[in-house]
Amino acid sequence: MSNPSGLPEIKQDRVLTSEDWNHKWENRNIGFHEENIHPLLAEFLKEMINGRTHLNIFFPFCGKAVDMKWLADLGHNIVGVDVSEIALKEFFEEHSIAYVEEEVTGIPEAKLFKSTSGNICLYCCNIYLLSDSVIGKFDGIWDRGALVAVNPRERERYVNVLLSLMNEDVRYLLVTVDYDPKLHAGPPFYVPKSEVEALFGSLCNFKQLKKVEVFTDKQKLWGLDFFFEDIYLLTRKSHS
Image (tube, rainbow, N blue to C red; front, side, top):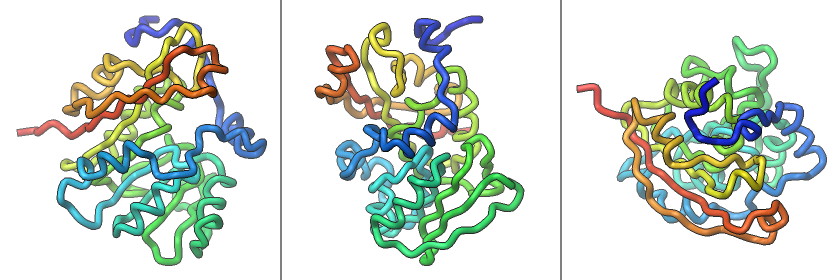
């Protein structure tokens, strides 16, 4: 099998299941969760908003990201998906947001946790079960820990789901991580710029907005000696 990303095959073969992610939440092994609004989102939100109001914004692999509350308070409609019911319920509980639980038509194994105000809808299911007929299309996407958490062999499948959910004027902020993949198996998985281009380049324009070093003792314990976050803005290419 070809390996267009250039990742060592052992990294490509690493697989985390939905059960693995649920166990992380059950065991509070959630170092990937950020307690504060992500600084790159705060810095580049204007690139996503682009002068628009009341956007539909999608959070893949949302966990209990505090960014969802922030953007909802700014007047946007938030839709997230995660396999962890614990994470989704904790989001509402920790922010004292009243919510209801509903079944999802057409996806028997899915649950919807929806704020009573209606502007935050969080789906508990595998992202690959969702479609625009269920959750609609989006004007903005915030992907901080999703693509880098997807099993490398499932990246094209993941990207195809996102492409199917994009409005024509979507503005998608994507954060990837850069480190020496020979030293750490992930997640988060190493996603170089060439991989972003390979995955999205045929249908999306993309530009790198910033590269920032975020190396901490946590990454040092992984055996790494550098760790960067890269943020990209992706937009749909014109069909004209």
